[in-house]
Amino acid sequence: MEQLDAIIDEQLATTPTEELLDLEILQQQNIKDTLHTYRHAKRCNEKRVMYEAVKWGQKGARTNSIFPNIVVTTFAVDEFNGHRGDFYKNMFKKCPVKRPRTADEIANVAELLMSDKGSFFTGSDFIIDGGATASYYYGPLKP
Image (cartoon, rainbow, N blue to C red; front, top):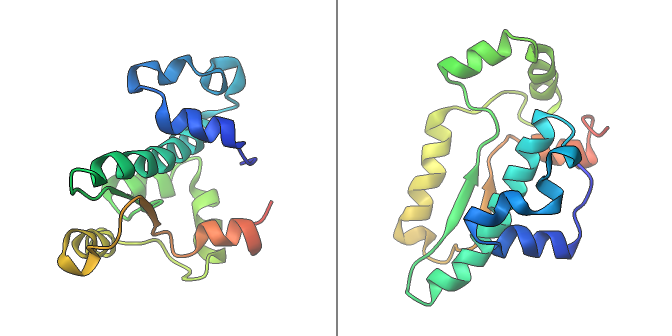
């Protein structure tokens, strides 16, 4: 996905939830397809976690998010065998760990973040995708 500028990032972070769909970038004519929508939602989540971490930090709370990409579940098996199956198989083949992640692997990160060992983490989005995102930027999945 193309880079978003700082103004759009700020809007995604700070616009009241009930007004998000009024943003120009999220208007139907500016959305290419469902994958584009998904990417905008992920970007919005990442920026909102940063913004909320500042506000909630003043109250002693920590705010983080986990971006797991696709996790092996019953639904995922349907995806693997559906019309996007070849896309996912290619992604797994070309990402650094060469496989999808499991729910337990996501739970391990959540456990760390909620424990005392994760007490310094806040305002962060943890990408748990086996390096797939990195591979899209710098590896064999790069468009």
